[in-house]
Image (cartoon, rainbow, N blue to C red; front, side, top):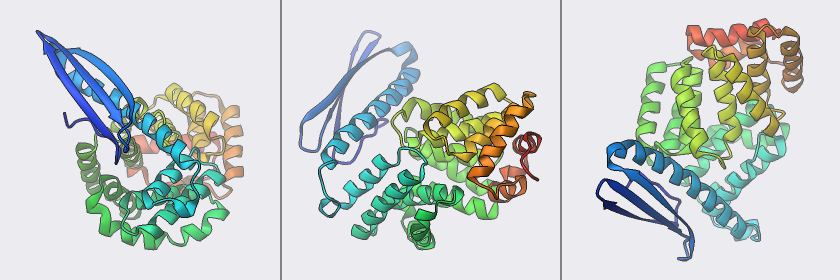
Amino acid sequence: MQWIETGEGYTLTQTLRARGDRLRLEVRLTSPDGTPIWSSKHDGDLSDVFDWQDKTGEAVASDIQGVILQSAGAKLAHLDDADMAAEQLRLKGLLNFVDVSEPSVFNAMRYHSLAIEKEPSLAQAYACLIVESLAAHTLRYQSCQPYLAKLPEWIKAAEALAYQNPVLALLVSDLNYLQDFNKAKLRDAIESALIRSPFDHTTLTLCGWGYVWMGDPWPALECFAKFFKLGRLSPYWHGALAGAANASVQAGRFEDALAFSEQGLKRAPDYHTLHLSRAAALAYLGRLEEASVLVETALQLDPDSTVETIRATSNYGGTPEGERYLEGLLLAGLPQ
């Protein structure tokens, strides 16, 4: 059953049994040293075998990601940086990326930079660094500037490694879109990534944001909905909430945008994108005073933010849905 994926070094064993029309999948996860650390059972019926397969794959993928993170994190807690291998440093960086606060982003970049120093061909570490660089650049984190200076070097290395890793290939496509705004190329890259890694929470986040940038909210919301089933312990949870809030404004689902942004701000109160999406939703709901307060907060976090700088950076595809988001920002009081 190859539709279930696991982490490097861990072994997932699966036993599928059938009795009449009834199915039972038993799954066991063992650590790299052979120690059993988790097991589960999933019952289904032949009459809905395909839906059962998808739901079971999502549930198992979500559970094992959490188990692996907890298990590996406990082992890494007592190791010095110099004693960790490149893959361990990569994981340590992910464990530090708990929100989009400046210390979180800085520490994640530090560990991932150390990872590629030890192993310059570690594609996953480049993928993490590019995501973190985008966050640091957008939020103008001064402490991260020494790492941001290395971004062109990292992108060049990533392009050479992209064929190895669907997440890295997708990131390169996202970066290219933010330069040339070629929707056809990005859409092809997203569809390819979703076929190659349908249960990967990072892929789902990046694909969702790709659709957001193209002004296509409905497939974006599908990606984020699937992410929320799989990525409950993902370091990109706040990013997915921000993307879902933006996509909900684009789709005219303003109450949903408020719900997503409220969840996100509890976890990442300095994430100005969440403030802006919430402000746009409130403005469309006629709650202009509340929207204005959120715009003021967003401008404190990013004083140079305007509707035109956002359009120039993210484009939103020139669609009616993308324009709905930008017009909502204007209505909320963000400068033109």
